[in-house]
Image 1 (cartoon, rainbow, N blue to C red):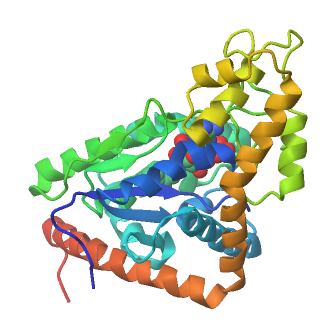
Image 2: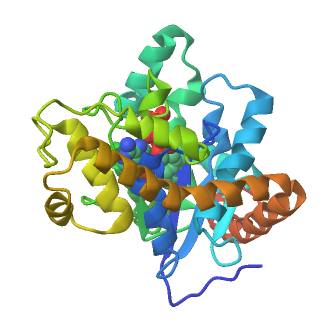
Image 3: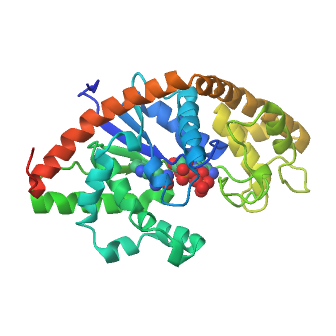
Length: 338
Ligand code: ATP
Ligand code: LTN
């Protein structure tokens, strides 16, 4: 039961359900773009819960965060009737294809993945799981099952996309044309949002100080409080200058990303005003943009049966496509069909 429109190319992307809320960086850097791309692609958006257990997880939290992530995506405009929004563990072909790809990946090749090096160092190299080591190969399976032309990701995922292309090519050469070569779709102009307290670091779930990040699920008064206490500088001039004025530059960048008004025009409009004025107006702009998403996400979370139904619909669409690819792969590698 697939509602694929064959005149459009496929697209796949994924996100980990690793926090109870997405932040403004996830929203402006990824989600806005994913919503826009639904129009031109058959979009598959996967909540990668199998990836989320590569580091220790609390089962209760994982279940809650998976639903919360889905609710925020739908609330922001991912249309589950149009695109396939699904939970990775509900499509068994991901784990099945990952095994086959594990067997054509070199140990040295996998060892070169920088995300593993970073994350395993954090965990302490000896206690990092083998799952964390093979994380990029599962990601390659996520992608290749859907024969996507485009994979919209952040710059940090470029190396994983290259591995995916290498594995696709290797499989195709060894067993015959099976996979479409996926292209990373990395938007240069994708808003890079910085931490409000440390405006030289990217806004991140793993920030040391929660005051530095604005979460989609934050209430209005904490959004206002966080923006008001954002770090700026002492010269009092509202002007973008990433080197000397990273705090003010970030506030202007957020404003511009949300409203579409250019930074230049903002500089003009706020000329002579104090940082307090900019912050007050920015808080209003942010609340107007994400407040309704938060409220809708909360509603969706209170309708758990309906949310699970929408995700099951997505899993049906995804399964139909993924199973067809997996069947081809199984046949090519020499497995007997029962
Ligand atoms: P962490 O905060 O733990 O580093 P993350 O917030 O980067 O994780 P991911 O799940 O790795 O979250 O990323 C989800 C998407 O959000 C990716 O496409 C990523 O490029 C984008 N993204 C994350 N942070 C930012 C940011 N500060 N600015 C712009 N885009 C971002
Ligand atoms: N590793 C990615 C999440 C991810 C993904 C994918 C992205 C898992 N599978 C498939 C694109 C396509 C991340 O950390 N953002």
